[in-house]
Image (cartoon, rainbow, N blue to C red):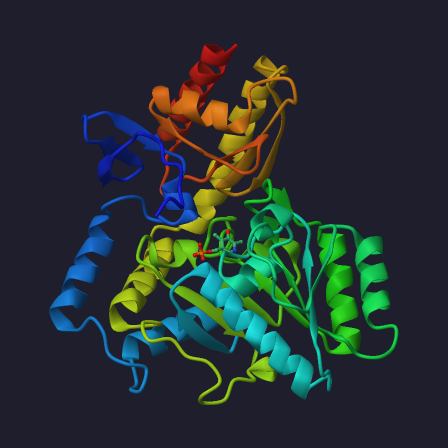
Length: 392
Ligand SMILES: *Cc1c(COP(=O)(O)O)cnc(C)c1O
């Protein structure tokens, strides 16, 4: 169906940070399937692990114990404050699980009949009906009304506005079940969370037994240079969702929760495909390789290099670039109002053999595989500069 307006580009092969089109042209990939291909393309370790798994077992129902799933849940819990994990197939689905958990928490813990979930403006939580309602961007709602009830929005990183909304919602007694936030807003323009704001939200949620849920779908699993975006904020959630980078290109999503809010009973929630042996093998391999190759430290080093080089580029083109912001290998290049737009720059970069993705009309996102090396970053900057010059 016509859900995408696609570029006239047919990608047929990949190796590391490089992609090849059907004409044999080579592109440096700073999109990575939008923060998905953690280990790059055709990674030999991931390929071997998945081939072995295919030779053993691909899928069994969640009616039975699945050792790969148990191992993956342990791996996630050992690297976070979570105690239990639910597995599904995408980011939207992980957030759907979070929304159902929030409502159950509202009913059972806070005694609310019609619980509310507070989310941020300019957020992005996925395209299923509840996840898109949670998404605080009217353009994604348009044409699909009525939306799911029970969501209220406030400006991201705005402590006073959050306090006012919370006070308003709770004026006549408990109404709020949960607050759902991205530690860094990805699609909404690469906007890092403000630690002071997040600390205050945590404090207010604690006072009222409101769930604090983080959407780690884009920034989680090492992209920030830490396992989780919330590690950078120094604020712990009660539950957090993940997906994109977890399987390195194999579709898997998950919701991780603390024991105190592990409210689901048998029959409450389920997924046919979620957490099957094949996808869990992919995620187990991604996590093991992030550690074996010390990719968290590597991402931190690449972040410093990339920010330095992008800042120099911005200084050379002050009429085009106004700001560089982000965490780790999720960086946003903010474009000037009177210069080229994000879609124009993405197109010009493609002509120079560089793949980029917009995050709104004036921000271009740089989200390469975590295995990108300094020599690739130099090429990225060179090609981005050529694209800028071609537009001026
Ligand atoms: C991409 C994204 C989602 C949706 O994930 P899908 O796998 O496309 O459903 C949700 N939240 C955030 C923060 C995302 O970046």
